[in-house]
Image 1 (cartoon, rainbow, N blue to C red):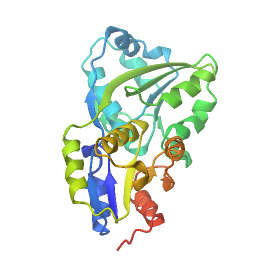
Image 2: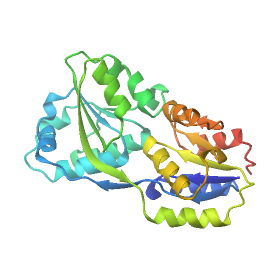
Image 3: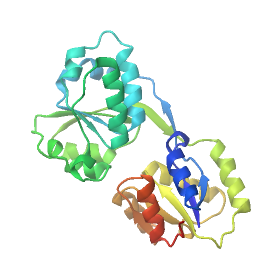
Image 4: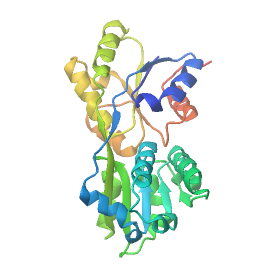
Length: 267
């Protein structure tokens, strides 16, 4: 079995090392690279007016780090407005990044909520099931700190409920140029009789993967997939992909169990 990890390079090391220790062949093929966005004056006003928002939602570690860089480098922003906020993080790693920076800068523990604290998945669905989100009044305003074009389901669902949603896009996801050559090397050397399982964690990853296969004349149906959300699984199944395993997170043990469902032989 070959496992293809498509996560950004700085976020895949723990998973890769764990699976290699279980004698799984791992191909690191990042399909996303995270780069910071320039913040315009309109977005700057969102930072200045944090007191307007009932909830601040952070969707990744990159969102946390970039937000704090912006915040701490701007002396015009209100510290009291920030410290009095409730915070939501999509997952435990995002929450830990937030906790670390917050305590270092302010010597206080933040009030931060994650779906996993309530046994909910670390994704859009988990965020939407949080009581603090489900019980928001119609007059509530939410600020989502995220990557460009990300978390559209979360945003649109809240808007349909009459909630005012603003977004602060602090980074964007691009296709890493070096990954084309990595895939070319893999494509030339792989034994296509082996089972090949691909990790897909976002619709952007899926789109980049499809493009890569198209460029090399390969078919999406020739691979099995571990996907992070049911929405992604539905998109794959609509394209005729049969072998799809949905996971709630991409922790090493979670992915290991998913690989077992595909028949991986682990030590």
